[in-house]
View 1 (spheres, one colour):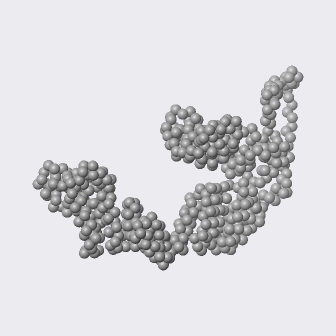
View 2: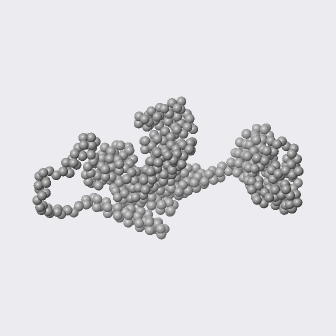
Length: 579
């Protein structure tokens, strides 16, 4: 069924029905979500629709499922190019070429990405043409470009240029761009129509104009009297434009004054200047975000949020730089953090920080998000903390444990720990339940937590030693029981545990265990970092050689307490046998 959905998707893609193709490939993903080809094909569809973020997500999934498939990196590179993330695109194409150095698609993509990356850093001389709301008005009023405004890909292209004017060279191959430049520059740039190109009219006109007529040749043979050069008339600037420029200049001056006041912590003056800038020029949202910063500083959080909302709304209308929109959202999130009084109050702040990161992945915003999530979690734990309920839940767990209903016991012990994270008895009892269920790693973790909270909690050593014994880590269990005896030297559980461990270790030394069991124990011991450290120590390797070849040297080594302890560790682990 997944293959059939894929086939329908391929057919729709070939026909140029990308939306339909996405639907079929999504069906294929739902039926077989581990097939990398389905994600790859859907990524291509999204890229064809200029939905590069979605294309990137599918490309990443493709590479995750099939890291050695070159085409996945081709999809990844194309998505990054679409998002104008050229360094990431270069990395993706290079990674793909590591798996297939002769892949032409990857080579071509790499070359284009590198060219775009180098070009993106050079400022465009026409960059300022695409700034301001009057751009759209000019394009709407001119019959040459009015029709373009109904085309989604054209709108996206213009929005990209407003965010990053230096990307103009990426769109110069689009014939519509010459018309746009003509309208914005106020000049008539002639571009041949499709009909002219087909008929060759444009070329014929050029050819005819390039060959002078007989009359003109005769006239040019006469000495020409130079015509007087016309004196250019001074260009008149409309009063409306002059006033607008003067207001913008005054707004910038007010903003600079506000910045100076803010640095001096003269917040009243800063507010007055930023407010003046906003009144003079409503096409620069930085004035709003700056005033929001002042409100945040002086504790007027509601006013800060209001300014940030206005900045985001106006920024969308003006197609402002996405970084400015992200800054407004981040500032709004910070205001919500300041207003938060409980864990739930952090939810809107976290949501807003996430929105800001979709606009621009700024490290400062990411840190604020992580901090907010951390505080929210801590507050949730505090708000949920209730020692009385924790004791009740632990007792319920004890009842289920007595009935040998260990999963239910674990559930209630876990709830007790959520209510009181420092309840050593709950950790100890849950460790016992995990032991009964054979979940030794989980039980060991709980036993260790017991001893982390209270190193003198003797039951914790009992739980930990028992689990290590069941895991056949007799050397570790022996060490655990011995440590427990330091806190209670007459504890019977600790002494019984030590005896069991010694018996097992002696049994290994006598060769009273099967070869298979010995091999299993040794293999497990070799995974222990401490055992690995002992065996990799050059001094200990020489000691082990002396034990085999020089009994006298071995006796000398045994006089060294540190070496003796390491030998005992190897013996207890079954690595070394003493006969």
